[in-house]
Length: 182
Image (cartoon, rainbow, N blue to C red; front, side):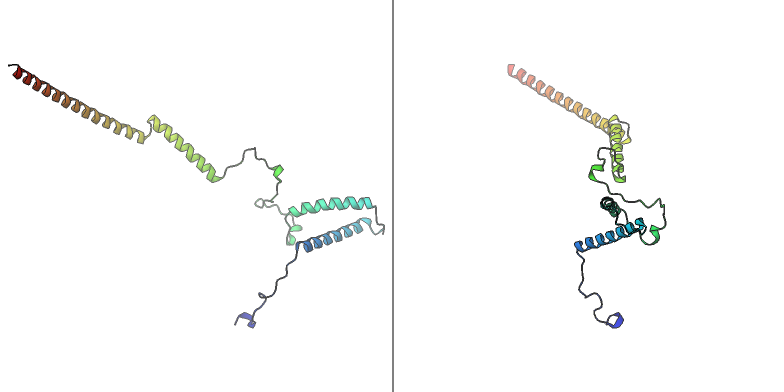
């Protein structure tokens, strides 16, 4: 048995949703009520309705103010009464696409900066490596010099062997030609 001794509780009830049209109608009613109270406060109890042109202008200006209010954050509790300047709190402002500055320089993220630094360091290393200034390049050049010496020695030995073989074959032919002539 669940806590409270009841079966079901509030979770099984049918939910009721408010449609966007109803929400808009409620907001319009609240705005109208606020305007009427404001007009009554301005008139000072004269009882005069005022100029219809003034009402129309005030309605237009109120609509633009209401649109601006939608972008601002709603304040909770006593926040509306106390003005707090918190340097850590950043008011989020929405920018239109036309206001965005895509051509100007933008700040790079930490990862992007690190990636660029890594690429530059690699390029610097490769330039020094090609110039033979790094330890690895010096070791490679030393190894290359040893290999060249070994190859030169092997080529020299091969050349000597070939010459010796040619001399032997040449001397053998001379001997044969001499014995045939006799």
